[in-house]
Length: 125
Image (tube, rainbow, N blue to C red; front, side, top):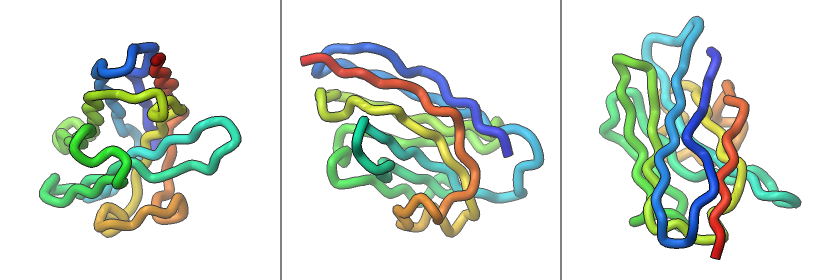
């Protein structure tokens, strides 16, 4: 599975951004998708995930109420709508995919098996 993320950029605190990630190649019939992020000097951390059906979504506590994950399974595309951005949201955001059960609340990087190249999100204060 190849994952191509886009939509990052430089914004001010309080602004919004929407990230997109398209999956291509030999995709499983059903698979979960998600987003992680990594800041300099920190480990990659879970942000959000969504099941194939879209009925199950999970969020890190730090983004609950501000970020929304969604997907268009017909297009093999996942989105991350980020509102009320804060400087601490600054990071490289990585799109990921894995077995559908990986989007059932699993937050470890090893729960997912395909990764995109990352897109930079910078939030200035």
